[in-house]
Image 1 (cartoon, rainbow, N blue to C red):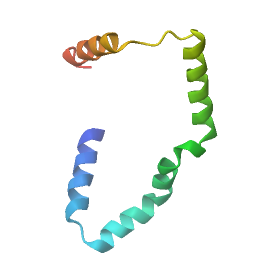
Image 2 (cartoon, helix red, strand yellow; image 1 turned 45 degrees about the vertical axis):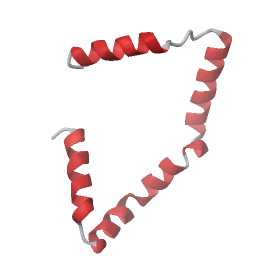
Image 3 (cartoon, one colour; image 1 turned 45 degrees about the horizontal axis):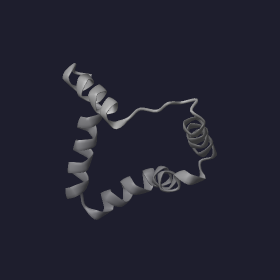
Length: 81
């Protein structure tokens, strides 16, 4: 089963699950949710964002304009990627 299907099945289940089961699921993943909420506290992520920003500002990374990104996305989608 692919991840997209799993996400949908979990979403569908949580919508109708009783309170006890929803609380149990939340307790099992609460730490992961908290980490997602505080992404700015992830020093590795912030360092990577700072590097990307510096590379773009200095010209080391030319980036991609919207038209080029859209063309690549459409091309990948039509190729089944």
